[in-house]
Length: 71
Image (cartoon, rainbow, N blue to C red; front, side):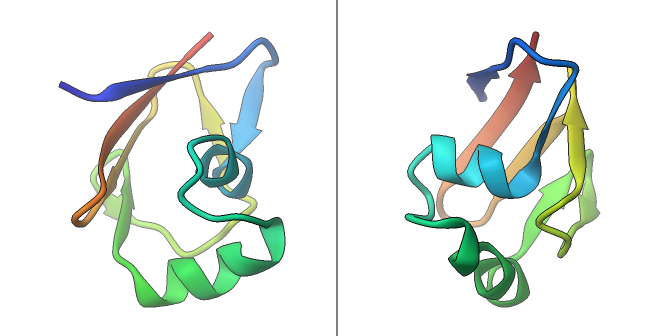
């Protein structure tokens, strides 16, 4: 069962989502993290920290877990 990332805006960036979930400690680390770790957004590999995530989007991260964005 995926964990929920609750947002109150139209979207959140992937980097912000990683930070909110305490997967990374700062936005500067996001780029390196996404290059080194396989992160799937809606089933497709994603390496852009600025990728916009909207209500219903899913994130899967190897050995960490899965998340769903909810507004």
